[in-house]
Every structure is written in structure tokens, then in C-alpha cells.
Length: 407
Image 1: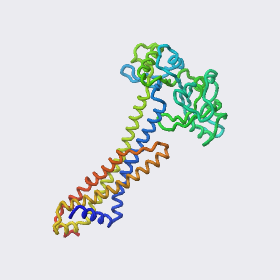
Image 2: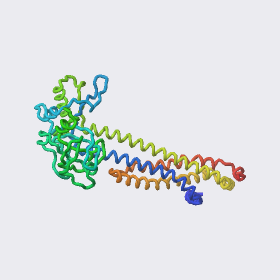
Image 3: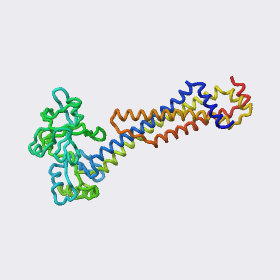
Image 4: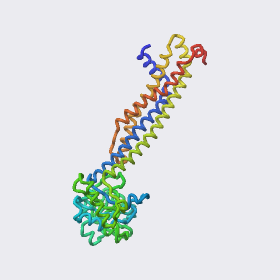
């Protein structure tokens, strides 16, 4: 009996009991589909975070308060209050700094924002006019915070699109209207363009106000949460970090760089950390999906063992008529591989469709990893061989006389 005969006979055998075949295939369909969908969503999340970070520019440095380490004790980065508005101005005006193009000091705090009818808890960001240049912020309507607003501590606000939706409704134009932040009334002067809601900080879900207003009138602070620095050229990033570091050490009267009460991050540092986190998340999702694929393979083995039991007399008759052990093993392996391959194809289509729909729902760029597709299909075939081998070997090992007597 040649391979083509065995193949068509396996097809015929599987179609005799469609319900059992369908149930056996279902486990592989779910396993393959979940592997492809979850890997795709993980990569989509990683791509979204990467694009958002890169959109800020490759020549951006971020200085945050808090030491990376002090002696043998690691500091609480970002929780200290060691940076000031004067530090930011010094980075821009000092003759010792030759690589800095612009500087944006920022003060950040979450609080409740209300209108007459609605309210939301969002990020309040105190900024200066340079924020729009350094952070590449464009306006959808209205105007941005001016130097006069910072000097006079005016109560004006620029809203992100998500805040507009939460407070005024979809498609509303809030320019000229009032909001209340910490029970202080602010006039809306602008709305930023949407930049997407993924990553470490949702750029659409924040309210921008003058830095001095945030510090003095809203939160009573005399420090800044971070300083964003735009460097002239990405090729001088390392030099810029050195110049900024030494200037801040001198201003803070610190001689040892190891005792620095601030930390400087580049976009590559942030991108590396983000990629590491999202990569771990993707690996976790893939592991969960792989477990379901393993369960599907065990299900196929159980079904094939049941099939061997039901066809014991048939196997005995075949062997009595001269069928070799190799033929019996091959037929059962073909049946198992057909089940997993069919399940793999259906699962591939299901996983691709599911990942596309979910990426549209949660506003992520659709990404399909061909590697995960081929890997899932390869694993599917391997499962067919691995979990089909034992039932096939058991069937081929039956003694003809015992098999013919089986009831």
C-alpha cells in the first residue's frame, strides 16, 4: 500500500466520525489561534510603544530627580525634589553647555479636573512654551501656552483629546470654555493633536498649564518633576549627557558623580527599557498560549487512543492479511498529522482575524509575525507526530489473534 492510498484512507476514516474529529481538532485550533493572536498583540504593543517614544525624537534627553545609586544603596529615582526651574534655565544659558538646543522643565501631578457636568482624574503637566518644540506637540485648535502666561502665572490650559472627550464629549471644541483643577478655574486656550494612548504616559490624557501656575497656585511646589533637553544632534548625545551632568553636579555642589541627585536618560535608554518590558510581556503571553497548544496535543492523543480501541478488530484483520507494522504506524500517524494540520490552518486564520479585530478595538498597529505563524504550524505538525506516535505504536503492536478476539 503506497502513501497516497494511506492518505485517502486516513481521510475517509476521519470523516466517518465528524464530531469526534472536530473535537480533536478544536484543541489545536484554539492553541494555534491563541499563539498567533497573543504573539501578534504583544508585538503590536511593543511597536506602538516604540513608535511613541521615537516620535519624540532621537535627540531627546530627560533629566529626572533622584540618584541612580548612592554607595551600595539604590536611590528612589524620580521621587526626589532636587531639580529646579533655575537648573533648567542654566542648561540653556550656561557657556559650559554647547550641545543643547532647547530645554523644557516640567512639573507633573495627577488630580481631578471638572466642568459643570463631568469630571475626570488626569495628569496635570506644568510646562513652558518650549515644551511644544522639545516634545513635538502640535495643536488641533487654539493656541499654546505663552511666555507671558508663565511669567504672569495665568490660569490657562491646553487639553489633550481624551480629556476633551471625557469633559465635553466626542468632537467638542472646548476653546474658550472653563474647567476647574483643584477647585481653581482655568480657561481652555487650546487642544493638542492626538498622539495615541499607548506607552508609559498617555499623551492624549493630560492637561497642560503654565509651569509657574502649576507650581505656585495648584500644588505649592518649588521644584520640577523632570527636565526634557533637546540636543542639537543625536551624534553628540554622549557629550550632552556629560555636559549636563557636570553642570548640575556643580550647581548642586556635588563633587563625586556617584553621589548625583539626578538621573539622565536618553531615548535609547527608555526604548530599551520599554522593549524589555513589552518583550517579557509577549513571552508570557506566548507561554500561556503554548500551554493551550500542549493541551490540544494531549487531546489528540486521547482521541487517537480511543480510535485504536474502537478499531482493534480492524487492526487485527489487517495484520492477519499481511499488513506490516510499518503500514499500521504510518496510517495512524497520517491521521494524527491531518488532524493537527487542519487545526493549524483553521487556527492560523482564526488567530490572524482575532489579532486584527482586537488591534483595531484597542487602537494598536496591526502586526502579524510570520515567524510565529510558521513556528505555530511547525509545532502543530510536531504535535501530530509526537502525540500520534504512541497510539500508532500501540496499534501496530497488537497481536493479530488477540485483536480479532477483541469485543
